[in-house]
Amino acid sequence: MILSDKTIRELLKSGKLVMDPIEDHQIQPASIDLRLGTHFLRVDDHAMDTIRMDEPIHYIEMEQEEIVIPPFSFLLATSMEYMKLPHNVTAFVEGRSSIGRIGLFVENAGWVDPGFEGNLTLELYNANRLPIRLQSGRRVCQLVFAQMDTTPSTPYQGKYQGQSKAVGSRIFQDKDK
Image 1: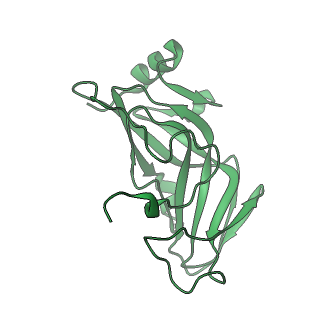
Image 2 (image 1 turned 180 degrees about the vertical axis):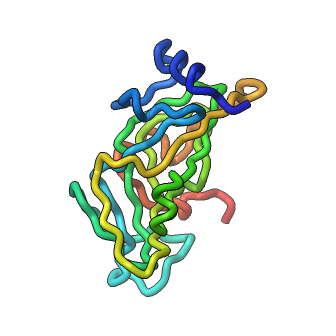
C-alpha cells in the first residue's frame, strides 16, 4: 500500500520516519520530494581504462553548490536529506516530472530498503544534447513510501548503510563472485 501525505506526516511526527532537514512543501499527496545536496562523484576515466565489477572504481569527488552535467554524462550526487526508514516501510525513488522533461534522469537504483539510514546516493544521467546546470537545494526526485505486509526478518544492513555523502559502487564487495 502506498502511503498518503497524512500517513507520511504521522510517521514523521512520531519519529518512526526520519527526514532531516524537511520543509512542509516537500510533502506531496503520496511522496516526499528530495533535494540535491552538495557532494558529487564522477568516474575518473583517466585512472582506469574500463570499469570492472571485481575492483574498486576510481571517482573524482566534488563538494560544490552548483554542478554542470555535460550531455550524455553520468554523475553521482547525494540527497540533502538524511533519512531513516522504519523496518516496515520501503521507498521507491522516482524522478520528478519537471526534471525528466529537461532530460535529467534521477534514480537510486529505484529502491530504498526498509531500515535504511543515511543520505541517498542519487544516480544522475543527462540524456539531453545540452549541458544541464544543477543547484543544491533544488527538488530533483521524490520518495514514494509503501507499507510492507510484515516486518522483514532482516531489515537493511548493507554496504551503504549510514552513508552521509555520495558513495560510489561497492559491487566489488559482493559475495556472488
